Amino acid sequence: MGNILEEIQSVYSEADRLYTQTQVEAALDQLAEEITAKLSTQNPLLLCCMVGGIIPCGCLLPRLDFPLQLDYIHVTRYQGNTAGGTLRWLRKPIIPLQDRVVLVVDDILDEGHTLAAIMEYCRGAGATAYSAVLVDKVRDHKQGSPADFVGLKTGNRYLFGYGMDYKEYLRNAPGIYAVKGL
Image: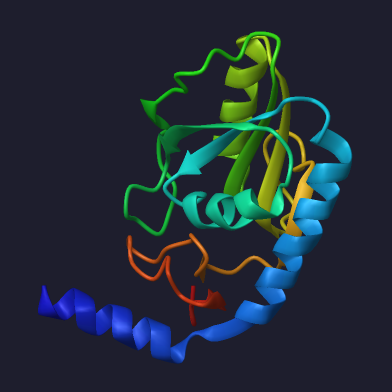
């Protein structure tokens, strides 16, 4: 256990801070304004994408001052690794999606595989689905559609903080950081 903690501390101390906590909070304010303008009268169901989406979703909720419901979905490709693998569905929403407006909230839009699969699932279940991500990685090749609501954009680097992790650690970092060398 000591080696992993030393690695995590090293990664954190050497990382490049791309966005401060203040900048992230301002982006969340802007996201909330855009979401409110589009969805406040549509009785939306927010689907928090576990585990990374828990912080962005939790930060957005008190900023969305209108009636909504909350559920979660858990689909993963990373499982503690720094590269994505096969999609694993761990939990589907309990609240029925048929004829609902659904907002899928996640931490990052990276390659787009996971978000595309979740959006396809929601639409297949009869929902009108939108997506909101705290961070959109600018990449040449992505799967699916772009997110409907985006807080911040970054280059193609490995990120952590505000829900994004490095080997299941550092989700709680107060800002958005890029790992050196990844």
